[in-house]
Amino acid sequence: MAVVLIMLDGVRPDALDAADCPQLQAFRDQAAATMDARSVMPSITLPCHVSIFHSVPPQRHGITSNDWTPPARPLPGLIEVAAAAQKRCGFFYNWEQLRDLSRPGHLHYSYFRDGAEHDPAADEAVAHMAAEVIGAEKLDFAFVYFGTVDTAGHTFGWMSDGYLNQLERIDRVFGALLAALPAASTILVQSDHGGHERTHGTAMVEDLRIPWMLSGPGVRAGTPIDAAVSLLDSAPTIAHILGLDAPAAWEGRVVREALAP
Ligand SMILES: [Zn+2]
Image (cartoon, rainbow, N blue to C red; front, side, top):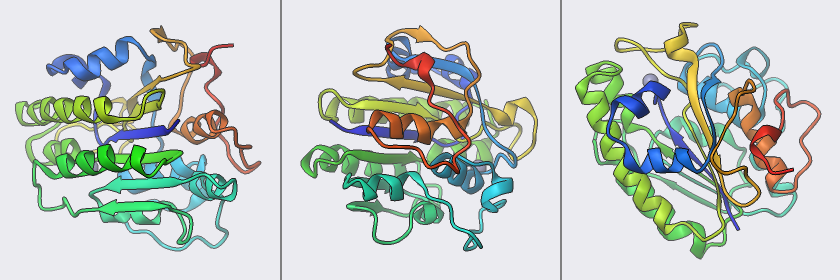
């Protein structure tokens, strides 16, 4: 049984309604979900992802731009915690900066294909590989990163036709991946930040509001989450589902509202 974090970079919650996304809509309907979760400041991809995997805000982990620098005092991240408990973890991604989300020696499988040249098909390769590998390699945790909707936001503008069209394409990619995952997988679908005009990174609610949707065995199906959810809560919730103890340094919480009692 795998836990899979599917990251939709730069996807605003209102985009899920504005675009025609039957796969994501169906997933949302049977998930425990909130369309009002929060990112962190600065609402930029690498700081947000380091916060997701280490459950502390950028002020504490020190990564405040898309340039990674080694932290003076490294914090334990989700991958290190999972690997210490002999869990098999895998990454599938197309933006190379994300290689620093875990320290060398902790991943069982890693697939990277550069998608920086705005190839609208860059997420298909990631999804295809994730679909093939997650079950075959018996991964306990997999991180699957789709970057093209964010790229479309920077190119065409958030909520523009070009942005929504790319989201509709990713909806089909998402549906195919979902169908290929091992039965009884737990799946967390979220974004890292939203966006406005052709950018993000600010404290505007359009940049900070993100979708957060959890589905799987032991999850309250079809339940809206009214409580506040932060992206800092993703690692504690995933760790809890994997049966791991959260390090004391983590600041997020287990989103118990999403879990069956
Ligand atoms: Zn971006």
